[in-house]
Length: 342
Image 1 (cartoon, rainbow, N blue to C red):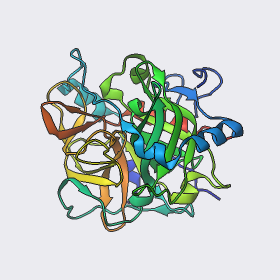
Image 2: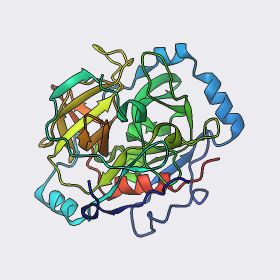
Image 3: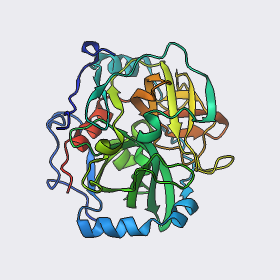
């Protein structure tokens, strides 16, 4: 029996369709008083799922292009002392990682991490199964992002960036997740999204500070996603400026989207035009939506997801930024993990 994901205070842990309204009820965690994620049905019938599966041939995946580079809008809200204080007032919460068997797996704190600004990940471990490429159709063309499977009630939740599910006023179509993608190989199959979720701020105005999303994917061959690949831990309202690892499948030059790439270092606060956190990282387009981890153990490939690759400034190609995972990101996760899978 799958272990149910439950948000608890982190200090107690050891280490093409219609916008949804009443059709998708919020989970128990997404109360009327809290943030209300926006959900959209994707391929929610068996027939639609088969159609999407057939659509994504190997050739189409290899030809998929990353989205245009994002940047904060000129009127973006900068990080302030008041914003930091508000974030600090929220209770930190965390969900541990789970193995494919459904057992809780503790991610140990890495005593020392190898600094990286964009090297291929060659050490295997859980991250080589849970991270993957995301493919979808955007404005009539095939595009790619990155994502990661996390522990969830339904065993079917993928965390990614908001612009990897919706951009330019419309949700993407033909949305699939390919965990463990490696030079064209799909060792764990292609998982079709049944529902997509994002924050109201991203949905309404594409606010870069809330560039967070989740996808619920249909079972494949009788198994849920985390039954097949396991799920990384996920946390919210954590302290800023931590040691972090970022992963993704950059597809713009000098990368080609064929391999998992990582960056590692100490996160810093964006002092320019957003409330995001930053990392020294050379990854390019296509890495969007890839996971950022705290407490990442390089020997096991386990960590606690705490942000995603989101944007870069054109004049600072060596910096990657990701949204702070606060209560709005938490609400997206809770809505997705509580959703039924067809």
